[in-house]
Image 1 (cartoon, rainbow, N blue to C red):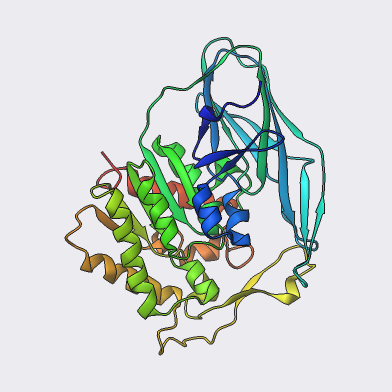
Image 2 (tube, rainbow, N blue to C red):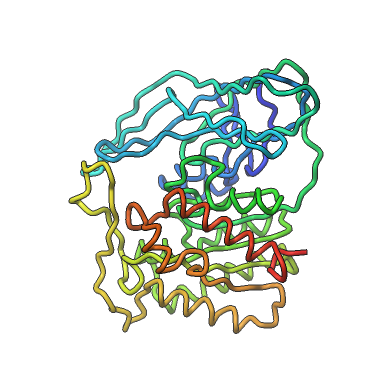
Amino acid sequence: MSVPSELLRGAAEAEVTARGLRPHRLPAWVREQFPDGQLLSMESQPSGVRLVFATTATRMDLVTHPTRIHYPGAVRPRGRIDVYVDGEPVVRDVLDGGDRIEVDLATGGTTFHTGRPHTTTVSGLPAGRHRVEIWLPHNESVELIDLRADAPIEPDDLERPVWVHHGSSISHGSNAPGPGDTWPAVAARRAGVELRNLGLGGSALVDAFLARVIRDAPADLISVKLGINVVNLDGMRVRTFVPAVHGFLDTIRDGHPDVPLLLISPLFCGIHEDTPGPGAIDPASIGSGQVRFLATGTPGDTAQGRLTLQVIRRELRSLVERRAADENLHFLDGTMLYGPDDATELPLPDGLHPGAEAHQLIGTRFAEYAFTGRGPFAG
């Protein structure tokens, strides 16, 4: 059968295509209002988006058509589909086939290559009714073509708190091996909440339209992680950044006046701790198999309001203190999730994004901080 859109969780909407359904994490009005190539590419990668259903089937097949971005000379693992049955991982299916958009890092030129669909199979399930979650790839766009099973499939009726999270490529899942291994996915499964992941690679830029998306989204818990992309882009100074964050939070509060709201400052990233952006790809790393990033600003150059990660942490902490009247607004220093000591033990593979083990560490720490004890999302 075709894939019913009501099985989708974590998406804003599903676009009907010639093949089937393409999940989008941002609504059409955003894509039409600001059709930025980077943003459109990132929002179409369904990080955190799942098909969730109940069934007594012992076998099922999901047919998808992936589209991936490929950088010659840079090793980028294929996307993966992760299947959980009754909360336990049963399939980790690496994609093959699909379309490929080849991007030349030196010139920016692109070449399009077509490919075949991909089928993910789950088989040998024991008899009985099961809750199935199929996590779609966090780093490749997919069209959902067909979902076949040897027993009826029904929408799942389990209700859980909805956690909406916005952040950068780290929240999106860069360098995580699969969609169930991004740090927000790790945290959401540990906490037993429904994730809506608005982590958007290169696009956590305090955009007003993102605040409106969060304002209008169903949410029981909200977290916003800001800073690294603003430094990467060298897009603001202290004078513009701080009021923009105030406005971002004000807009969210227009729709969710009392929902627990957690503002998270950047994780540790050595290249930008004391050095402003813009960030760039290290030319010497192109063709080496492991692209690395660097900061092109002048170390310590903050006198005219230029932003580094240390400056942003200071300003975000101060901002939350000045909004003390909002008792449901909380602040988390990102270095509590991944700090200097962690960078020594689990270095950032490309100088910017955590690796697989670090995603697990960050997700576990976040779940323990936010969802347990006296954490902002506990209770």
